[in-house]
Length: 122
Length: 144
Image (cartoon, rainbow over all chains, first blue to last red; front, side, top):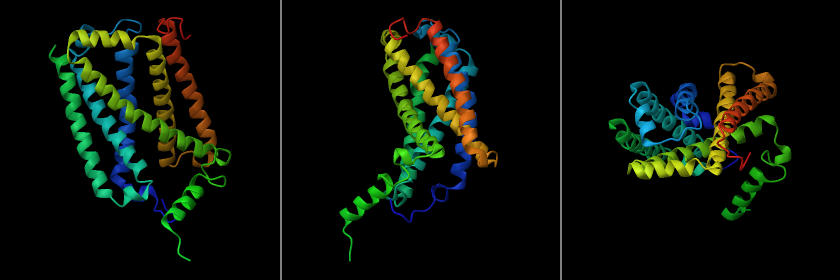
């Protein structure tokens, strides 16, 4: 870091700022639905393959889980980008950071889709 | 006089985290604590997402593996860590809401008051989350 650093908002870009806010609002709704459905709906009951299969028979929950993963990755990795851009060494390698985070995000999304599939297909 | 790289690094570190810096705990004001908390909870939550996916990967290998893993995570120590996670999510969401309000030009001049209002709402949500887990007996009397 140096004393002459540029404001992070100027480095990160307006679209990044906009999607960070949009995903934040969507995440509050989706996360509340996910946490209530997965953990609080039948609080105290044992979680097993059967209960997860039962929940994921409902298309709405599949949509919630997958769209939430997409929003979490967008918000989390974009947030990570903002944190990284507080450091000069990453601002200097901005394109590489962007590329790396995109690859990580897409790979993780595919990973998430694949691991939930056995539960969906029952 | 030319300043060496190491010297510059030491000076920068002192400027950032030294006794006179804005990050020194006694120099930090409400807004800075809120910012630091937002960053820390954000990083914790990103790490958690990857841990969550790793756990699910282990679990998706076989039904037996999933069920035995779920029994491990039902132990009070894991439930307590889940509760800490809920606290981090609620803090991050409430402070994030405060940031969105500022983006819309609402409450910037009363940022400290807005912070404490958000924290009061967060405290209520945390208490509700704790009560639901406690009431269901998930802490097993071992922790609470």
